[in-house]
Length: 101
Image 1 (tube, helix red, strand yellow):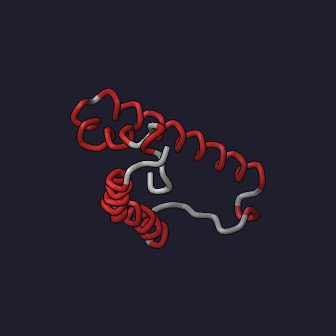
Image 2 (image 1 turned 135 degrees about the vertical axis):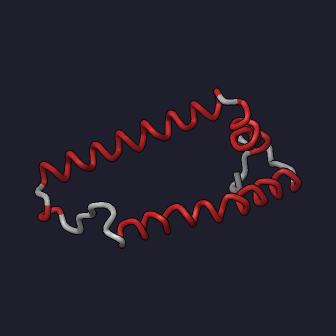
């Protein structure tokens, strides 16, 4: 089934509301890197393959763990769920899926 125009417009509106935060996070990350507040390696040779694989694995584990628990807490803490996360579940039903969701 195709979502109604009203549902798709709401999806576009939600996407537009989150756009500033979505663009701010990478900008802050770049700023932190440029200020030297974190260690960034441009080439694998700077640290060697074993450490590169270790750092990449640790990063993926920490990022995945953080995303999982953030999502889980959004379900557990009612004010967070109501304020931020409920919209996520509003658009994951068969008649509300569209390219804008």
